Image (tube, rainbow over all chains, first blue to last red):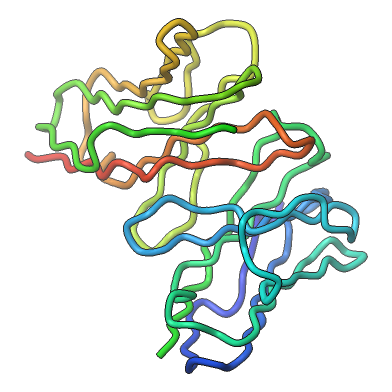
Length: 115
Length: 114
């Protein structure tokens, strides 16, 4: 059974650019959640996708957007990058995903640096 | 609204000593509580979770946690620390909003000394 994978591992961008991060969910999982973990802090919920639709969103601006594909993989897009967007971005998958007791399995993360 | 407070951003213990990492939560609905561990340059790994039923929860690597509703706490313990336990530990709560959004504490970094 393949776990959650994310790409790329590291990424360096400049302020104002756009970035796309990718996540492949664990086999059989239909829900993907994205979290932002700033240095020295706990992860913060960005949004969740369930069966290709956004299922909930945290306190992040609209320039953070996402997609989920029919195979349940997902993308996180961030437009107009700001310095404060520098963080570790974590993807987590779960199944069936709609209940609060479901365990979320995390990928290794993508380290984004904005210069 | 839900929130998590982890008391102590850094905890240091000797190898073989008791590990106690503190977590207090706030929740207007019955909480589901989780402990995750993060090793350097890695993602999060689930240690244990409490949903309903028995309030003492056993997890992986010898860790356990006890849900105390009266104290709104979910402290993580391990009787004997091992060098490999050195990592960042996060307590999280979910249970509202109709989807399983996790709200994390700020984390506690555990150092284990020989």
